[in-house]
Amino acid sequence: MSKTIKLTSKRQATFPVDLCESLGIGPGDELVLTPRVEDGEQVWMLRKNSTPERDWLGSLNQFARHVSDHSIESIRESIARGRASKQ
View (spheres, rainbow, N blue to C red):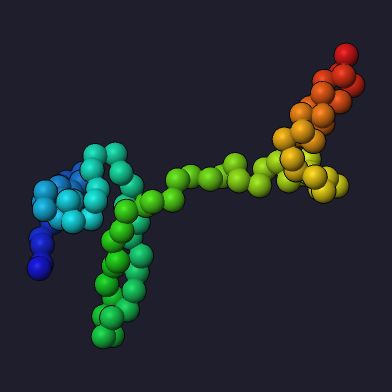
């Protein structure tokens, strides 16, 4: 099933409804284009970006380097100690 998508002068494109439905995409979704080589020709693989932005992941590691217990009780105690030291 081939589809043709035309770009506007602003490099915007309109995707056919059936293509959007088959990809499971809608307004506001992000698409990821990945270059590949198939049969000696460069093609682009298109997929929905299902991985949310996670720039914050690991940002608190510096505070947990020397902590072996990550239970909720231990976390609450640590917060209480931190608050007490700032008073």
